[in-house]
Picture 1 (tube, helix red, strand yellow):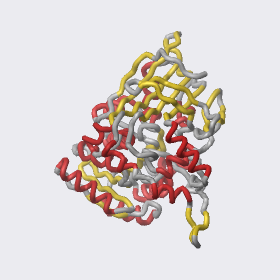
Picture 2 (picture 1 turned 135 degrees about the horizontal axis):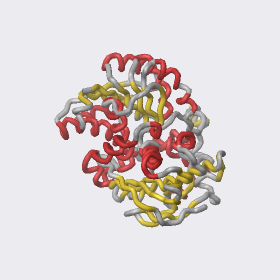
Picture 3 (picture 1 turned 60 degrees about the vertical axis):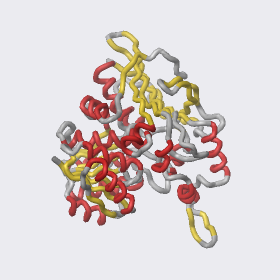
Picture 4 (picture 1 turned 60 degrees about the horizontal axis):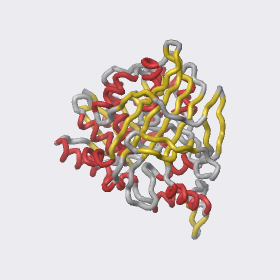
Length: 405
């Protein structure tokens, strides 16, 4: 039915490729491209073995628009799924505009020299994509992505007004390493060492970074995972949700971290290994965080021995028919089952499945429009149905627990 170009051959790229191959009635031809061709070829060999499907592979530097344009013109996809680094979002969007191809990513743009991620850089492309009669879908992973769809679903079906949203992300898995990150170490560490923000009564409130002793945290009892310490963290989906959820008074994002993980990270920060500016070492310029990334395990390599589950969802409090109600929408994903199916850990799985599903929505005409879109602006029903059919079932329950005020 459609040709799709996937850019990025890490853990998420592996999942997206295999999930597209599982849905060949939609993704009739697949090309996987990366700076490292060998990674693409390895995944292509696994796709051939698992599904008896041949996919194309290509080498491309996603920082260079001319290379991207040449690849897109050669393969001629209907859509590009960007699961490369957030630094490369804008170059890939530029290439899609130049070649007339729809665009989708899983994480918003982040300037390499500034550890802040925000949508303003990509929202600025609204007019360009609108004039080109193209769709750009932003943040179509799990969080952001499915969490946004949960919010849209709650607004459409469950509430007359949503007043409070708490997004809770728990990884209750064990990978056997003393310290490792579940996705790109550079992006992950930049994210959790920055000042925390949440939105309340029309403004952003700042609190200390996760790794500081006075950070905001509480114990939450997660379905199937049990009590876990959950830390207030800034996450990008809040920036778009405050624009699109009517009646919202507060939105917060919480993520679980172990004491061991935070201790390692505090030490690394204290000795300067999380710095993103260049330092001179033996006559050469290096960025400490990039060097640390080279020393840490590749997140894709964690999948083999990963055990346990992820639990990610949203708690909503608001009004229905004049009465206060509280609902919890969440997914549970098993690391070992994800590895058994697509040789991935659950973090990559929960990001890759929604990316495939979002692309499917556009290619099947279930999502349409001109311009740049966040997930909550689109119909959540077919998207949530599709992820449930492809390994990410979700459920809605009444919430009767306690949250910090």
